[in-house]
Image (cartoon, rainbow, N blue to C red; front, side, top):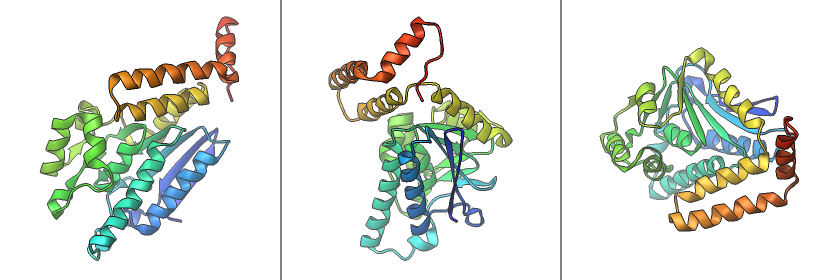
Length: 255
């Protein structure tokens, strides 16, 4: 299997399993990964998704260049749109997706990580958008998501130089929220997941939705949408339970 899913304690760990090719993305891997994400989102027993790569060398080292070499304009557009579909499935998931980046996250691999809601990196992680070195630009959302995460200036530099950065630099610019030893990467991701699982799933989904929408609207529009979403939650059993549990000084029973 090119993509494996391990489910335990309401956490799905989805692993791109092509280590002999540094987990590079081809049509089959994209299809399997999109399906795995979709199934995890639909699974009522899953609350958080962790995305990682098999082996110690790579999260996803990028797209399979041997496949890309055969593209004409239409083939390239189809491949780009499939990447967009995958990234959108991750970004628009109502369940948090944590990228546990182990090793290379280059090109499409970096773009997949950018679509995740939270990114943590092992100390051997390497990030980059090296497409310009091939006479290309990022085609899976890198030109759009990277500036929103690290700022326009830093994003422009990384994209037009094509240079790689290590985990510490990624942390410094805000691309990742934690850097941890490789052997504790999945444990660290699950630790975050368990913190998330203590919270209301509707509130989590609504929060992610508002954060995603903030990039495409004015502050005034965002605030109006936020207050409406805030108010809507007061009609849910989840919010009533959360408030009641706080007053009664007990843990809420959300799940």
